[in-house]
Image 1 (cartoon, rainbow, N blue to C red):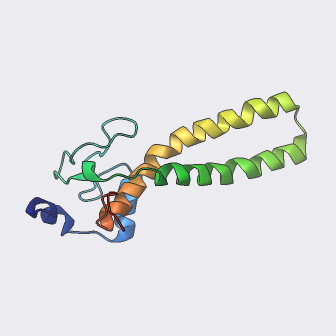
Image 2: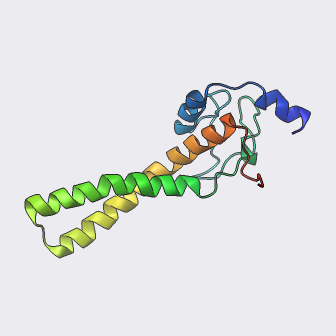
Length: 130
């Protein structure tokens, strides 16, 4: 870690505060700067406090969380609708994949922000080796 990194990594909020800031897609350090340059691409640094958030690699954890969350929303709804209304198969194979896709695309950037906040709070960059 360089001297410029300790400037930012030295001041930490609580774990939950950093995650909450990330879930808002805001900088986990200052909470005001936006961390995304696009849909999922992180900016190299926070525009407000210059924290080096672009170094954090969240990789596969946000999609896993998204799949977990969407599955726990869609599957109970699917089972309930099937039991209560017995819609035709063509409706089922049209509606549920569409709902799943919309939810996944909606949740993914927020969950990635939360994971970035978690990793920021724990001083992880995603390139650690064991």
